[in-house]
Structure formats: C-alpha cells, structure tokens
Image (tube, rainbow, N blue to C red):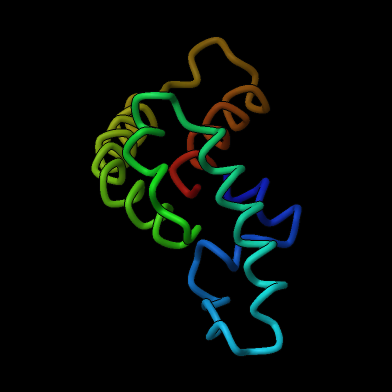
Length: 112
C-alpha cells in the first residue's frame, strides 16, 4: 500500500508528514480533498469486516495507525518465518544465480 500511495505522492498522509491544518488555514480544503481520496483508497482496499471498524474515521493517518496497531504483530511472525527460510536454504543442485535470486527475494521481503 505504501508503494501505491508513494506513486501517487500521498504517502505523507499516512506517515504523519502532512498534518491536518486548522479549518481556517488556506490549505485546509486542499488537504481535505487529498485526505478524503486516501481514506477512500484505504477503505476500499480492506475486507468488508475490517472496513466496518474504520468507516467512521475521517483522517487517513488515523485509519493507518489503527490498522498498523492491529496487524503489525503478524509482521513479526512473518519476519521470523523468512529468517528461518534464509537460514535453512541450501544451494543444492541450483545454479549460483538461482540460489542468489532465491535468497535475494527472501531478503527483500524481510526488508520491506
């Protein structure tokens, strides 16, 4: 999701870089329009049962923080699994380039 938001130059709405201006600020309407777009993308990218729990939120940053707090625990399990895969992978009959590519794919996933 971060990649998609970055491609649209909107990741700052979820990472806290762009903060909600006060309603009387000259950029408030621009911020609101962009925030609403990001909220829509987030809401439509999650499953209906989860969507119900964030529908009432109107700030993309709040939705992002809520989802991150709920699901970041799973990342720890996934990282552990990937580290286990890296530790147990063997070249076997693979070419060095295939072996390296497999390691690189796992490593890139750990890094992301």
